[in-house]
Length: 271
Image (cartoon, rainbow, N blue to C red; front, side, top):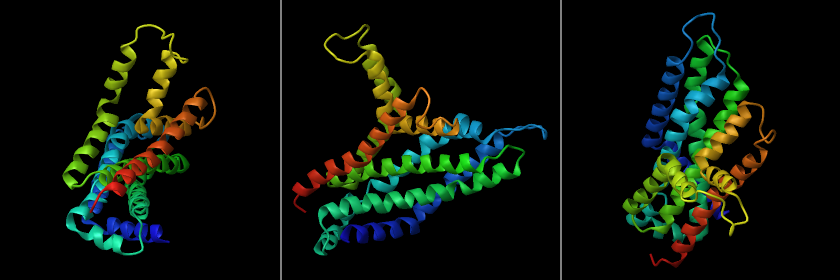
């Protein structure tokens, strides 16, 4: 399949890139140092893996760094080859533009997922050595959620890359998406909700439901909700099950919609 051929090439190129190796090393070192610093000081003390991930590593490092790495990995996927001229050569082979866009999403997303698992190896060793209650299942499961978050942002970045003609514009778009979801979403949603002080009779939903939707619409919040539910043995159970289902739906949306939108623009462009 042409799509798998593009995905395989992009996967190998991304895994072998020096930038990816440096990003994985930096991420792994930061998480390992953070895990070591916040460990209990007394030898008799116990510190659960779940608490470390949900209270420290996740909110401070994963939801901030993994999306940024996803943007860096994906922003030049199409626009970079377009600027260099190699995109014309790629399309001269039996590859459609859809194969190119979604092949790059799959290839670069898989490379980032693999890098995320590699990046959590050193922190796992730190947690095994220091006096903590290390839960390997919880740690591995949380790594899956972190990798999923990276794949979502790769898909968004590749969609931006397909929609614009230059790497610079793709980078600006990717940084804008990162700033919105990671840095400004709370301010944005607060302004939206705060603009209405009472119930809105014209809408069939309440402000509480709108607030819940806005929280679930952010991929970083959605992953955090699902990861915390997993660590608390409440994944797709308990009072937050509806919010978790909404979060999954929005994660699927952000994985598919930006590449599709970018492809629509890409299909109309004259190379």
